[in-house]
Amino acid sequence: MTKKEIDQNLNEDNMKLQLSRLQHRFEKIKLGGGEKRIAQQHAQGKMSVRERVNYLIDPDTSFLEIGAFAGYDMYPDEGGCPAGGVVVGIGYVRGPAMCHRSQ
Image (cartoon, rainbow, N blue to C red):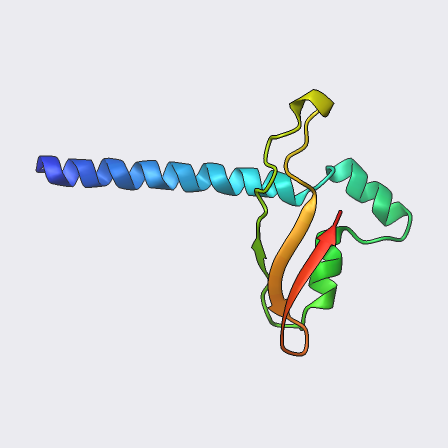
């Protein structure tokens, strides 16, 4: 294996590691206030913000969330929060639409 191939493999491995970390952080962000908070909302007959968005968009279409990392890890003095608590994205609701909903 040449040095160039080794470097390419190292870069690919590093990229996969970074993508895995990003996905893990996004999974945490998607929980909003956490599983306990989501369970409380369900007990009150409410849906979480992402459940409401999924209910809103047309069936068999996707929702492109943008800005999920806005405010990421910015509130350590207030007890921490995975992100800013706002869901913004683009999806189809009888045509293209942009949704903004605070948690």
